[in-house]
Image (tube, rainbow over all chains, first blue to last red; front, side, top):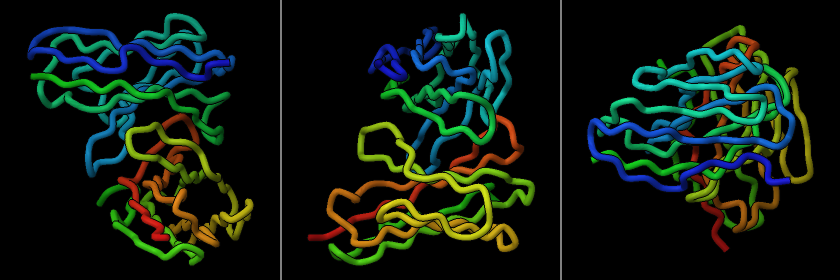
Length: 113
Length: 111
């Protein structure tokens, strides 16, 4: 039981390049989330998916798109990376919405030059 | 005003002391409150959650919630050097999946 896995662990992009961050969970959770974490800012929610087939914007969605591929997988895409998107990205999942504990993946460190 | 506010610290306590971490939130409709611990370079992991006013104890940890004052705290008794980490307060502001995190308080427990 791996919990929440993320790939890649680390990525360097040039401004304007695109990439997709992958996330998968093996806990049969309904809800999945993407956060970014910047120094002094805490975790900020980018997008979430309450269930397979649905996605919703969080606090900072601009410049990102997401796909809930199936119940296990939730990907985050940067279409045209900008230096302001340099951050650590965490994927998380929870059994259900609201009250449930969120379990986090190990994170992806992204550097945009 | 940020939705969830924490003192960024660093908070330094001697080993064996009580560490007190505080968090305030702005949305009176908030329903669920969480404390996560994050070691440097690692992902957050849940310590405790609390939904109702009052205290909730789990081992050395006690979470306290006061909805009237929009305040939630975490007490760590008999602090250990292994408790040195950043502690994140999280609030479920709308009763759905939209979790808001504070910036975290960095705690150092000195041997």
